[in-house]
Length: 150
Image (cartoon, rainbow, N blue to C red; front, top):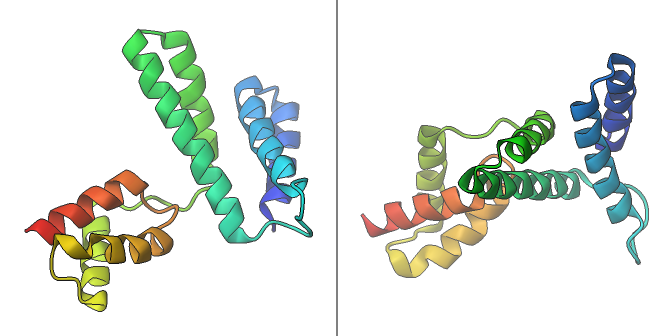
């Protein structure tokens, strides 16, 4: 089932359950999908990669906002962002643990024959594509930098 249909079904169940926080987050996701589908030059449905990219971007925005609100002591806004983030993460693939990320990056490094920090760009290109949605881009970059330096 495509993401759009899943979201529509979840919106209906959130309306029935009168879960306003969940409903808001689901409508935000649907809005992103509709905006992407109405872009000029777009035809058909979103591919799973495009859906993953949309959800990852939305999750990152919520995390960044939550960090800002936490620093400013805005607990009310922080709770909203964290609840929306939790809903978005339901539709993302399970994130890698630190150990799984390290193992995946080591495998990519050995496969592409990277030898040191000068090869970071080559490794990041492959790692970003393969690990999209499973790990944060910053975490991937930090792990690649750490493994290539040591």
